[in-house]
Length: 296
Image (tube, rainbow, N blue to C red):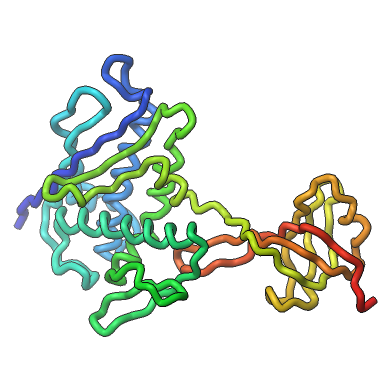
Protein backbone atom coordinates (compact mmCIF):
# COMPACT_ATOMS: atom_id res chain seq x y z
CA UNK A 1 0.00 0.00 0.00
CA UNK A 2 1.26 3.49 -0.82
CA UNK A 3 1.92 5.82 2.11
CA UNK A 4 3.98 8.90 1.38
CA UNK A 5 6.54 9.84 4.02
CA UNK A 6 8.12 13.26 3.55
CA UNK A 7 11.26 15.01 4.73
CA UNK A 8 11.53 18.77 4.27
CA UNK A 9 15.04 20.10 3.68
CA UNK A 10 15.93 23.78 3.36
CA UNK A 11 18.10 24.31 0.27
CA UNK A 12 20.11 27.53 0.18
CA UNK A 13 22.87 28.68 -2.15
CA UNK A 14 24.51 32.09 -2.02
CA UNK A 15 26.95 34.21 -4.00
CA UNK A 16 27.14 37.42 -6.00
CA UNK A 17 25.61 35.68 -9.04
CA UNK A 18 22.66 34.41 -7.03
CA UNK A 19 20.30 37.20 -6.06
CA UNK A 20 16.80 38.25 -6.97
CA UNK A 21 17.83 41.76 -8.12
CA UNK A 22 20.37 40.66 -10.74
CA UNK A 23 18.87 37.27 -11.44
CA UNK A 24 20.05 33.78 -10.60
CA UNK A 25 22.92 32.34 -12.63
CA UNK A 26 21.33 29.31 -14.27
CA UNK A 27 24.56 27.30 -14.32
CA UNK A 28 25.11 27.53 -10.56
CA UNK A 29 21.43 27.04 -9.88
CA UNK A 30 21.03 23.97 -12.09
CA UNK A 31 24.33 22.38 -11.05
CA UNK A 32 23.70 22.73 -7.32
CA UNK A 33 20.15 21.37 -7.67
CA UNK A 34 21.51 18.44 -9.65
CA UNK A 35 24.10 17.76 -6.94
CA UNK A 36 21.43 17.68 -4.24
CA UNK A 37 19.31 15.35 -6.36
CA UNK A 38 22.28 13.02 -6.97
CA UNK A 39 23.13 13.01 -3.27
CA UNK A 40 19.64 11.88 -2.28
CA UNK A 41 19.44 9.34 -5.13
CA UNK A 42 22.81 7.77 -4.29
CA UNK A 43 21.90 7.52 -0.62
CA UNK A 44 18.55 5.94 -1.53
CA UNK A 45 20.24 3.40 -3.81
CA UNK A 46 22.87 2.56 -1.19
CA UNK A 47 20.18 1.82 1.38
CA UNK A 48 18.44 -0.39 -1.17
CA UNK A 49 21.77 -2.02 -2.09
CA UNK A 50 21.22 -1.12 -5.74
CA UNK A 51 23.31 0.69 -8.34
CA UNK A 52 20.92 2.35 -10.77
CA UNK A 53 17.67 4.31 -10.68
CA UNK A 54 14.99 2.54 -12.70
CA UNK A 55 11.81 4.24 -13.88
CA UNK A 56 9.88 2.61 -11.04
CA UNK A 57 12.47 3.84 -8.54
CA UNK A 58 12.07 7.40 -9.86
CA UNK A 59 8.34 7.10 -9.32
CA UNK A 60 9.02 5.97 -5.76
CA UNK A 61 11.58 8.65 -4.86
CA UNK A 62 10.58 12.23 -5.59
CA UNK A 63 12.14 15.58 -4.71
CA UNK A 64 9.87 18.58 -5.18
CA UNK A 65 10.54 22.29 -4.70
CA UNK A 66 8.30 24.49 -2.57
CA UNK A 67 8.35 27.91 -0.91
CA UNK A 68 11.00 29.73 -2.98
CA UNK A 69 12.22 32.70 -0.92
CA UNK A 70 13.66 36.05 -2.09
CA UNK A 71 17.34 36.96 -1.76
CA UNK A 72 19.98 34.27 -2.23
CA UNK A 73 18.27 31.31 -3.81
CA UNK A 74 16.50 29.50 -1.00
CA UNK A 75 13.68 27.00 -1.14
CA UNK A 76 12.24 23.94 0.59
CA UNK A 77 13.08 20.65 -1.08
CA UNK A 78 10.63 17.96 -0.05
CA UNK A 79 11.91 14.39 -0.31
CA UNK A 80 9.12 11.86 -0.73
CA UNK A 81 9.31 8.06 -0.67
CA UNK A 82 5.97 6.70 -1.85
CA UNK A 83 6.39 3.22 -0.36
CA UNK A 84 8.01 2.27 2.91
CA UNK A 85 10.39 -0.61 2.22
CA UNK A 86 12.50 -2.61 4.63
CA UNK A 87 16.08 -1.38 4.30
CA UNK A 88 18.57 -3.93 2.96
CA UNK A 89 21.27 -2.37 5.13
CA UNK A 90 21.12 -2.83 8.90
CA UNK A 91 21.65 0.80 9.86
CA UNK A 92 17.93 1.59 9.46
CA UNK A 93 14.94 -0.72 9.60
CA UNK A 94 12.93 1.01 6.88
CA UNK A 95 13.64 3.09 3.82
CA UNK A 96 11.98 6.43 4.52
CA UNK A 97 12.72 9.98 3.42
CA UNK A 98 13.76 10.81 6.97
CA UNK A 99 16.29 7.96 7.03
CA UNK A 100 17.66 8.88 3.61
CA UNK A 101 18.36 12.42 4.81
CA UNK A 102 19.78 11.15 8.13
CA UNK A 103 22.32 8.86 6.41
CA UNK A 104 23.23 11.53 3.83
CA UNK A 105 24.00 13.96 6.66
CA UNK A 106 26.03 11.38 8.63
CA UNK A 107 28.02 10.41 5.54
CA UNK A 108 28.99 14.06 5.07
CA UNK A 109 30.08 14.30 8.73
CA UNK A 110 32.24 11.20 8.27
CA UNK A 111 33.92 12.62 5.15
CA UNK A 112 34.69 15.90 6.92
CA UNK A 113 36.32 14.09 9.83
CA UNK A 114 38.63 11.93 7.72
CA UNK A 115 39.63 14.79 5.40
CA UNK A 116 40.31 17.10 8.37
CA UNK A 117 42.59 14.44 9.84
CA UNK A 118 44.40 14.09 6.52
CA UNK A 119 44.77 17.87 6.26
CA UNK A 120 46.41 17.85 9.71
CA UNK A 121 48.88 15.26 8.40
CA UNK A 122 47.54 12.46 10.60
CA UNK A 123 47.67 8.78 9.73
CA UNK A 124 44.26 7.23 10.47
CA UNK A 125 42.76 3.76 10.61
CA UNK A 126 39.40 2.09 11.18
CA UNK A 127 38.43 -0.66 13.63
CA UNK A 128 35.21 -2.55 14.24
CA UNK A 129 33.90 -2.35 17.79
CA UNK A 130 31.72 -4.78 19.71
CA UNK A 131 28.48 -2.86 19.03
CA UNK A 132 28.57 -3.32 15.25
CA UNK A 133 29.82 0.22 14.65
CA UNK A 134 33.24 1.30 13.43
CA UNK A 135 35.69 3.66 15.12
CA UNK A 136 38.20 5.81 13.26
CA UNK A 137 41.39 6.64 15.19
CA UNK A 138 44.57 8.54 14.48
CA UNK A 139 47.90 6.84 15.20
CA UNK A 140 48.01 8.50 18.64
CA UNK A 141 44.91 6.49 19.53
CA UNK A 142 42.51 9.46 19.58
CA UNK A 143 38.96 8.53 18.59
CA UNK A 144 37.95 10.76 15.68
CA UNK A 145 34.49 9.39 14.93
CA UNK A 146 32.21 6.51 15.80
CA UNK A 147 29.73 5.58 13.10
CA UNK A 148 27.97 2.70 11.39
CA UNK A 149 29.62 0.78 8.50
CA UNK A 150 26.66 1.66 6.27
CA UNK A 151 27.43 5.36 6.75
CA UNK A 152 30.94 4.63 5.48
CA UNK A 153 29.50 2.75 2.48
CA UNK A 154 27.23 5.71 1.72
CA UNK A 155 30.16 8.14 2.06
CA UNK A 156 32.15 6.17 -0.52
CA UNK A 157 29.24 6.37 -2.96
CA UNK A 158 28.39 10.03 -2.36
CA UNK A 159 31.88 11.54 -2.09
CA UNK A 160 32.16 12.29 -5.85
CA UNK A 161 28.87 14.20 -5.59
CA UNK A 162 30.07 16.31 -2.67
CA UNK A 163 33.32 16.97 -4.53
CA UNK A 164 31.35 18.13 -7.57
CA UNK A 165 29.58 20.69 -5.39
CA UNK A 166 32.88 21.77 -3.83
CA UNK A 167 34.33 22.42 -7.28
CA UNK A 168 31.55 24.97 -7.92
CA UNK A 169 32.68 27.18 -5.02
CA UNK A 170 34.35 30.36 -6.26
CA UNK A 171 36.51 31.64 -3.39
CA UNK A 172 38.12 34.37 -5.52
CA UNK A 173 35.21 36.29 -7.06
CA UNK A 174 32.54 34.86 -4.71
CA UNK A 175 30.09 34.31 -7.56
CA UNK A 176 29.11 31.08 -5.79
CA UNK A 177 30.11 31.18 -2.10
CA UNK A 178 28.37 28.30 -0.38
CA UNK A 179 25.58 25.76 -0.37
CA UNK A 180 23.64 24.77 2.74
CA UNK A 181 21.18 21.90 3.12
CA UNK A 182 19.41 21.70 6.48
CA UNK A 183 16.27 20.26 8.00
CA UNK A 184 13.87 21.92 10.41
CA UNK A 185 14.37 19.58 13.37
CA UNK A 186 17.80 20.77 14.44
CA UNK A 187 20.20 23.49 13.34
CA UNK A 188 23.03 20.95 13.67
CA UNK A 189 21.49 18.77 10.91
CA UNK A 190 23.32 20.76 8.28
CA UNK A 191 25.37 19.96 5.18
CA UNK A 192 27.39 23.09 4.44
CA UNK A 193 29.87 23.38 1.59
CA UNK A 194 31.82 26.64 1.45
CA UNK A 195 35.45 27.57 0.93
CA UNK A 196 36.70 25.60 3.96
CA UNK A 197 34.80 22.47 2.92
CA UNK A 198 35.99 22.88 -0.67
CA UNK A 199 39.61 22.67 0.49
CA UNK A 200 38.80 19.44 2.35
CA UNK A 201 36.69 17.74 -0.32
CA UNK A 202 39.06 18.49 -3.19
CA UNK A 203 41.52 16.24 -1.35
CA UNK A 204 44.59 17.68 -3.00
CA UNK A 205 47.91 15.90 -2.64
CA UNK A 206 50.02 17.05 0.30
CA UNK A 207 53.75 17.76 0.10
CA UNK A 208 55.22 16.68 3.42
CA UNK A 209 57.65 19.03 5.12
CA UNK A 210 60.23 16.55 6.40
CA UNK A 211 62.71 15.47 3.70
CA UNK A 212 63.50 11.81 3.16
CA UNK A 213 66.78 10.24 2.06
CA UNK A 214 67.38 7.36 -0.32
CA UNK A 215 69.83 5.85 -2.75
CA UNK A 216 68.34 5.63 -6.20
CA UNK A 217 68.75 5.86 -9.94
CA UNK A 218 66.83 7.84 -12.57
CA UNK A 219 65.86 5.57 -15.46
CA UNK A 220 63.24 7.58 -17.34
CA UNK A 221 63.33 11.36 -17.61
CA UNK A 222 62.04 14.40 -19.44
CA UNK A 223 64.95 16.85 -19.19
CA UNK A 224 62.78 19.79 -20.25
CA UNK A 225 60.32 19.24 -17.42
CA UNK A 226 62.89 17.92 -14.91
CA UNK A 227 60.58 14.98 -14.17
CA UNK A 228 60.29 11.27 -14.84
CA UNK A 229 60.69 7.93 -13.09
CA UNK A 230 63.35 6.70 -10.70
CA UNK A 231 64.07 3.55 -8.74
CA UNK A 232 64.67 3.66 -5.00
CA UNK A 233 67.38 1.08 -4.33
CA UNK A 234 67.85 1.58 -0.59
CA UNK A 235 66.16 3.74 2.04
CA UNK A 236 65.20 3.80 5.71
CA UNK A 237 62.34 6.19 4.94
CA UNK A 238 60.36 4.63 2.06
CA UNK A 239 59.99 1.18 0.47
CA UNK A 240 62.23 0.34 -2.46
CA UNK A 241 60.62 0.43 -5.90
CA UNK A 242 59.74 2.77 -8.75
CA UNK A 243 58.39 6.28 -8.19
CA UNK A 244 57.52 9.33 -10.24
CA UNK A 245 59.72 12.32 -9.49
CA UNK A 246 60.04 16.01 -10.17
CA UNK A 247 62.84 18.40 -9.25
CA UNK A 248 61.76 21.33 -7.08
CA UNK A 249 64.26 23.55 -8.89
CA UNK A 250 63.08 23.60 -12.50
CA UNK A 251 66.46 24.96 -13.56
CA UNK A 252 68.35 21.99 -12.14
CA UNK A 253 70.65 20.08 -14.51
CA UNK A 254 70.93 17.10 -12.18
CA UNK A 255 68.30 15.12 -14.07
CA UNK A 256 70.84 14.83 -16.90
CA UNK A 257 73.87 14.37 -14.67
CA UNK A 258 72.34 11.51 -12.71
CA UNK A 259 70.45 9.76 -15.49
CA UNK A 260 71.19 6.03 -15.12
CA UNK A 261 73.69 6.90 -12.38
CA UNK A 262 73.32 5.88 -8.75
CA UNK A 263 72.91 8.88 -6.46
CA UNK A 264 72.02 9.86 -2.91
CA UNK A 265 68.73 11.75 -3.05
CA UNK A 266 67.05 14.16 -0.68
CA UNK A 267 63.33 14.60 -1.46
CA UNK A 268 59.94 15.60 -0.15
CA UNK A 269 57.05 13.14 -0.41
CA UNK A 270 53.92 14.21 -2.24
CA UNK A 271 51.26 12.03 -0.66
CA UNK A 272 47.80 11.14 -1.96
CA UNK A 273 45.01 10.18 0.47
CA UNK A 274 42.45 7.51 -0.49
CA UNK A 275 39.19 8.16 1.42
CA UNK A 276 37.95 4.65 0.64
CA UNK A 277 40.86 2.86 2.31
CA UNK A 278 42.06 5.69 4.63
CA UNK A 279 45.55 4.98 3.31
CA UNK A 280 48.18 7.40 2.07
CA UNK A 281 50.42 6.59 -0.86
CA UNK A 282 53.37 8.37 -2.42
CA UNK A 283 52.17 10.05 -5.58
CA UNK A 284 55.48 11.70 -6.43
CA UNK A 285 58.91 12.47 -5.00
CA UNK A 286 59.90 16.13 -5.13
CA UNK A 287 63.68 16.08 -5.44
CA UNK A 288 65.54 18.67 -3.37
CA UNK A 289 69.13 17.61 -4.07
CA UNK A 290 71.17 14.70 -5.45
CA UNK A 291 74.72 13.79 -4.49
CA UNK A 292 77.06 11.23 -6.04
CA UNK A 293 76.74 7.89 -4.28
CA UNK A 294 79.58 7.17 -1.85
CA UNK A 295 79.30 3.48 -2.62
CA UNK A 296 80.30 3.90 -6.28
